[in-house]
Amino acid sequence: MRDTEMSGKRTGSRFSRLSIVIALSASALLSAVGPGHAAPAKDPLPADIPDYQAALDAVKSTGVRNAVCRFLRTPVPTGGAGGPVQTIPETAEPCQDLPVFTIKDPLARNEITPGFVAGTAKPLPTEAVKLTQLVSSLSTTVNGRNATVMLAPTQGGGWHLAGIRDGDTDATYAGKATLGTLVFTEPQIRGWYQLKLTTVEPLNDEARQGLGGLASVSLSDYQKLVKARYADKLPGSEYDTNGYSSGYSPQHKAADTSSSALLLAGGSSAALALVGGAAVLRRRRRVAGTC
Image (cartoon, rainbow, N blue to C red; front, side, top):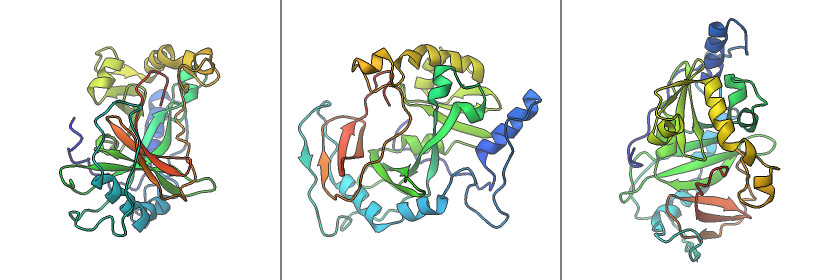
């Protein structure tokens, strides 16, 4: 799927997708795995995303918009990972002379959990998948480019800018969630899946390869697959402690965002990530066991 494709529209349902998946799974399994929660009758905010108003405020803020403009003004490096780093010039009006755009409402970006990968968690929606980030794409391409704003949860509540990625793939797949289904990613292979009851279906080629070409598998069988791929690469494993990777962890650590310095590093599929108070455009590693 091309990154420039428009992301799917967020469903207008006021019910928690995860809660509905849980409820339907419970009915299928004849055992309750968790209550379904409806958002207040007059509350249009999605019930499955905590502090959603804070996320809306973040993507509509001047600071985030300016960061997106600086990102779009800077060409994506074509060199490999570890290439030279350059500073993105500060400008008083970073959005000046750029085409008009808006940042869409955030969508949930769910990932498989370490417990599910390790096999210590049960193959149930509540145990297998966890909300880790929110993603927002742009309303239109800007000079032929799109971008995805990534928000991370703030300690104590709320959301803040975690990075900006070229393209809108994350938001496109996140937008495919519908009433009664849940979309999640296996970030190590960039696979995207849809969870229907307790059935996992692939949404892209990487996911289809991850399922061995099958059109669908049970959540239990999918757990066996990811356990075989990553269980020996979890944080604290020999693979991790020997420095072969950062281990498997879906938690995207947020850093102090007070610094306005923007740095640009070489690499394709680049993301502007907040590290040590600065924003760094870096290649997202695709090594198994690394987020």
